[in-house]
Image (tube, rainbow over all chains, first blue to last red; front, side, top):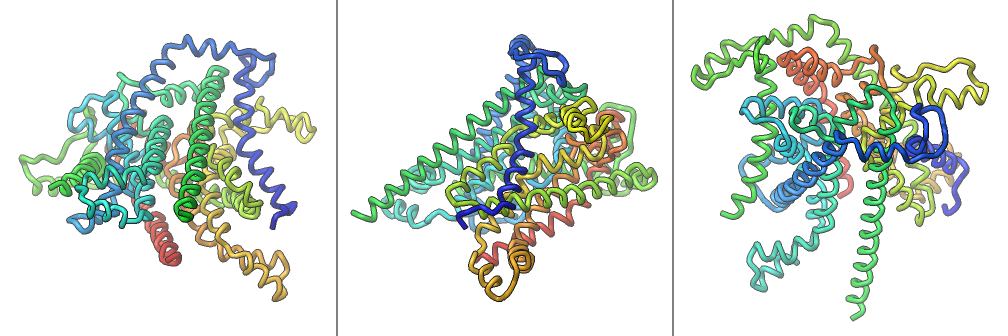
Length: 271
Length: 293
C-alpha cells in the first residue's frame, strides 16, 4: 500500500483544497488595496496599519489575552487535580456526579452554558467584567484539560510513583518529582487547548461579559455582522499566522522530544 | 486531609459554576416574566420555604413554547439541519479519512497535522472566510460566471445552503479524526482475505472496511451532530432570515426580547432533546473501549 490509488489522491486533494482555499483567499484579500473586498486593486498593507490605530480592537485584544492567560492557567491546575482525582482518587461520595460534571460541559451547547452562568452571576450580584469571563472560561476549559491529562495518567506506570514512595518521598514529593514531569506534555497541551478555547470563544463570553469588558471575538462578531471588511481580513490573517506558528512549533517540539525519548530508551536497553 | 482538598477544590468549583447555574436555569424557566431588573419574578425564596415554591410552580413558559409554533419549527428545523449536515460531513470526511489511512505511513503525521490545524484556528474566522466567498459578488459567483456556467449570480449567502457549507467546513476535523483512527487500526489482511475469497475491491470495501470502521463513523457523526444542534454562530453569519435554529432563537429571545423565562425554557427543552444523542454517544464510546480491551 505504498502507492496511492487515484481515488485516494483525488479525495485528499479536493478535501484539503476545501479546507484551505477559504483561508488562503481571506489572507490574500487582506493585502488588497481596495476597500471593496471583491475587487482586487493591487497589493497593500494599509489595512494592517489601520488595525494598529484601531483602539477598540487593540483594547479588546488585550482583554482577550488577559482572560485567556488567567483562565487557562487556573483551568490547568483545576483540570489536572480533577484528572488525578478521577484516575487515582478511588471511591468517594458523589464520584459519579463529579465525573458527570467533568464530561457534561464538553457536550453542552454554548448558548446554554452562557445563559446559565449569566443567570448565576446576576443571581449573586456579581458585576460582569473580566472576572466573570475568567470564571466562565475556567469552568469549561478545566474539563478539557482534565480529559487530556487523565488520558495520559491512565497509561502512566504507577510503579514509578510507588518506587519513589518506597525510597522515602512523601506523596507530594512523588507527585512533583516523578508524576508531574512525566505527564507534563499532557499538562502543557491541556494549557494550550484551554488557551485557544478561551481566545476563540464568542458565545459564552457574550453572555458573561458586561459593557465594561469586550473580548476580540465579540468585537469581530459585531463588525462581521455588517459584512466583509479588509480590516477584519487583516486581523484574521494575523490570528491565523500566530496559531500556525504556535501549532507547528509545538508539534516540532513534541516530535523532537519523542525522538529523544526513544533514543534514551534504546540507550537504557543497551546498557 | 490532603486527599480531601484535592477532591474538594475541583468538585466545589464545578458545583458552584456548573450545577448551580443549571438549577437556576430550571428555576427561571418556571418563573413568570416581569418588566423588572432582573426581568423575571423570583419565585424561590428560602424564607417562605420549599413548600411555597412548589405550590407556585407553573409550566406556563413550556406551555407557551408549545403554543407558539415558532419554537416547534425552530426545534424541528435545527434537527433537520443537524441531520443533513452530519450526513454531508460524513460524505466529505469519509473519503478523506480513508485516503489518509491508505497514505504512505511517513506522510500520515503531516496529513494529520493538516487536518488538525484548522481546528486550532478561530471558529469565527473560519465561518467569516465563507462570507466573502459566497456573497452575490463573491469569488464563487465570479468564478462560476467566468467559467460560463451561470450568467446571473446565485444567491447562496443567507440561505440554508450556506449554513450547510459552513457546518461541513468547520466540523470536518471532528468527522475525519475518529474515522481515520478506526481505519488506521484496520488490519489490511482482512481485505486481502476478502479479495482472495472472491470479493471485488468495491465489495470488499462495503462488506469489510465500512463495517469495521463503524465505531469511528458513529463517533464522528455524534461529534458533528451534537454541537450542530445548538449552533449559533454559523446560522447567524451565513444563514438568512428563514434559517431557523434553536440556538439562534434562544440568543434572540434573550438579547432582543429580554424574555429570560422563555429563553430558559428554550434551553431546558434543547437540553432534553440533546440527552438522547449524548447518552447514545456515551454507550457507543463505552462499547468501543470494552472492545479494545
